[in-house]
Amino acid sequence: MRNNHPYIILSETPRSGAVTEASLLITNQFFNTSKSANQWRKDKNFYRVKGKDHANNDIISNKINYHYISEFIRNEGHFNPTAFNLPVMKSFWLDGVFEGKINFHKHDETAPHGLAIADGYIKQIFGEKYPISPKLIREGHTFTSLQPQLLQRITKIRTKLIENSADSLTDDWFFELRSLISDSISLVEITLNQIYIMAEYNPLANWNFQKEKLGERHGRRFEDKLGWIYQISGNHLGAEKYLPSFHNLRELRNHLMHFDPPSLIVTIEEATIWLNQIIDVGWLLIKMRKAVGTEISIPLINFILQKEAVFNPEPHCVDRLPIGTGNSDYISSTWPKY
Image (cartoon, rainbow, N blue to C red; front, side, top):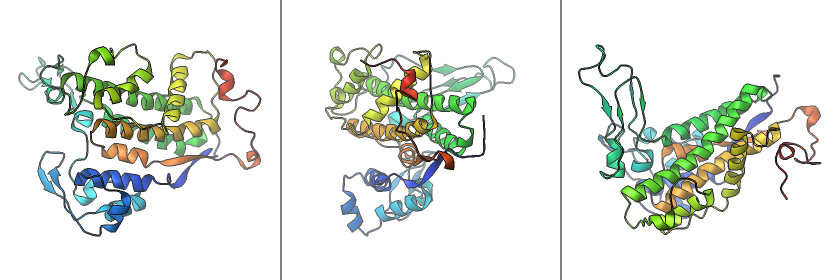
């Protein structure tokens, strides 16, 4: 079922405080400091940053400061480091990507002689003791990390769902939403696994890996996995503000993926809430990175700068009952909670 009414629209600007926090994260990371936003606002000086570009060439940025970064984000709604000729902004071991694709078989006559793709990047990240050596010898892909791709995919699909919300009563729109929620939860689980594996094989300075305390990676409650952050880094996560959104989406993901119970109601009004809770997943990922002491990436910065979704009912439906009235809506399709 489709009509021409946009049931979900985008807010005019990102969340209150998001531009300030994003500008602060970028500035502090490039200048390797931990100043407050107020301290940076008082600093009118210009600086240049040295580093590497995506081709690993040495570069020096244009003149830059907190004010320039903040102004760019407010005007554009996202951050683009190439506008200032800035170095790559990422975590080497979370975002480091060797992404190879080939369209031949190693022994096929069209293949370059003896060519195969071996991912040596993985050993640079996790160390020589890491027991896996990926090698691609036929048509396909090889990935070291899925972080950049998933961050950008989630942002893209979320925007697409909102822009195409006139289709929100179609099955295809729902299945896109289902995939979006699954990818968002998967991204957090991937991050936790990367942290655990890094701690096991190539820990950062001041990290602690005691397997008898951490336990195995598999078959664990999610709360136990979150505990890895403190057990490995010694730093508390401090993400209490964002965890309720994540836990709600995680329960929803389980329902959507396993269809247990075998009933489901998805209202557009509730889907709007879920689309905004996805932004909280980005903030949770930032808290995780800060706790373990690794860098924030540009795709993650732009993830938290996404504008909020706003439910936009048709004019004759603007008077609303609260969600869940009379045990209705999504909750009515879930197992009773006693």
